[in-house]
Image 1 (cartoon, protein in one colour):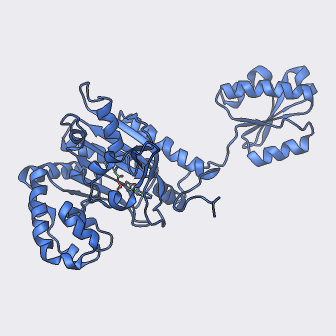
Image 2 (cartoon, protein in one colour; image 1 turned 30 degrees about the horizontal axis):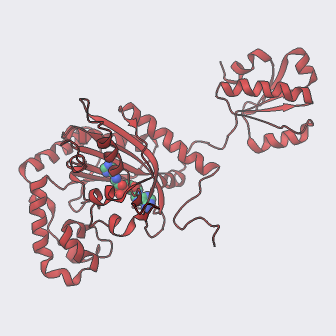
Image 3 (cartoon, rainbow, N blue to C red; image 1 turned 180 degrees about the vertical axis):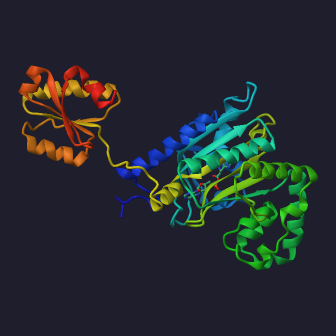
Length: 416
Ligand code: HAM
């Protein structure tokens, strides 16, 4: 049916859109405390931006990208994730030019051609944070701490932090060799995609969705046995920080994450509620360089906003977002409509939301409007009010009615 939304996408309106914006407000306020500034990049990029970074053997690139040719025959892709686009922007605009570490956050829609199911959509929103310029386990710990703080601030409990390291370059080289050796005579028992992954990047076999339950994958060599001393020491310092900061975690030596750009630390916050990752991220030592930028390491994470919203709805964590209007102005004659327009103008200048009825002068339809939008205050203006300059203001929560002088209405409503 042509006029239905595309499978795997969502409409957000009324309360749902407020919930999305509420989450955005909370997370962006927190992340600004950590010194991040916002980066807004296009919804689509040249396809190469994602192929080279996320990885040719990854599920995202091989199966999930919305890629199309534009009228100029350029291959473009709706962004399946934020990190690659943020790095592209960081390098293209030479944002590395000044000293110090650089911190950016983003909030917006991402697109993946996945099988739609609970918590998994074809268009979904991510809130992400990325930092460039420092490779220190203390920074890794602080990044994880900031994600933890977001969860705490949103009052989300029952989340498990899974963490692992996939080591430095040498660790991963040795591990790749060991995986190739291990899978060499088992390829016929794996899916066709895994055969392809074997040649391109054998680590991607470990996040195969088809073979995930097979003993072959479960018994595969673990990265922890191939870590260099430096990689081990780096990881242990992060764990020590998490211990000291009393952030609970489990080390999951099978966690490798499905994107090729990761190096060293990888982590996921898994919800007990549905077993899904609500936030995931890690370190990427070489991504900036691979976009022809300087040799600057990066680290970051992204939250799945729909998943956060699901949990918050399930656990009743949203505040009352129903009230959408601060003031309704009721006007009882045509001249009062003009006074109402003037008052609405002054209230809105003070960031108060106002509704009024433009057509009716009788009370009944105007109270109907008021019932519908559930305002915090109702102001009534009629001939007597206009002449005396004293208006009737109803406080709908405390259920009181006051006579307020016109020039005091704004401060009265703002509670000043
Ligand atoms: P990711 O694990 O692919 O990582 O996605 C991050 C989060 O986005 C997931 O944990 C999940 O909550 C949400 N998510 C992913 N796919 C879907 C979907 N189809 N429907 C709903 N939610 C989804 C990344 O995207 C990396 N860029 C994260 C990162 C940032 N790493 C470093 N910096």
